[in-house]
Length: 478
Image 1 (spheres, rainbow, N blue to C red):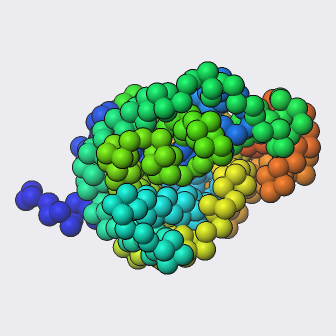
Image 2 (cartoon, rainbow, N blue to C red; image 1 turned 30 degrees about the horizontal axis):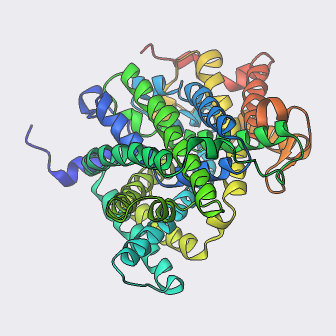
């Protein structure tokens, strides 16, 4: 067989919705996947998340809240990575067996459109970085004019990376992640040297969020659980390229469960340092760096942070277009990338997501939570790690996952029940209203995951099991 052209290689790598990846075609070892996923996870929205939590908790509570809730939920939600690697497919292909083929097409599109809101935040932070960089050289830019222009530029440059496919993404992230890990470590050192740690620990939490300390802790936890869940529908796309199940699981879990929380914690430390130093909290890392660091390192860090956002745009565009393509495989990948570029550019100029960050991540998690719960339960207890690849791809008339005209009414019903009962009886993410003591144990997002998974498991114990497991007669032992 002759050498495959770069264009053909990219085409093969971007057909998640068409065929499984064979073992011989997988290109990511542990370190490749770890660095790429880390590069994806340490976008500057981590600093925004950290600053959000820092306002309402003490220093020690902030660290416990960030690391514990992220690590625990990431380790659970990444369990299905074993099937992603074993079968060479991503989460959204497997979900055809949980939600139905048409159900996946609709939900994949809806959730990806929500996920793209993160990249609007990313591009706005890129614009702030560049404006601060120019300011460091004595060039004043009008924010009203240049912030939307530079934000859209970030989206366009990220689109160019996405069009290059996984191989380009791999090499971009190898450089950016290594640099950003160094910058992140130095940033924390700068914070602790610029402001005494005793002063940061003495900062009193803002009590306006909720009257009790437990309430503030769990509302902050809701933000961190939602943050952990925000990776879920994207996390199981890249592992299909991993060479081993163990490497795929640990590379992804460590990136999202340890590296990302480290940068969230760094954002929290920086926000507290800014409060002690300047008297206000700041979520834009470029402003914090310019204020707390010396001019030389500040400019270097701002430059690295700025261009990391471009790499994040590229990886995010690729991953979320693959999610949509899993549900709508006949749509051209390039067309999806260009449509995503237009959509994210509109969100960037609009600015709503950045202005309503807490509500945005929590609301998105209310849909992702039940899917996480059902996916883990389906993999471990209902289908017991076996699936029909023929029905996933409608091969030779195998239609076990058509269910009811393309919709699995059981899976969709569990999702709707978990979503609605949470908003009505547990937690309303739009108003931040706690409605039940359940929230103080699970958080709202955690409740949706537990509820969705529990309902799906209970359904499998009833006569509905026959409806849910139409594929048992054609299972292939893998």
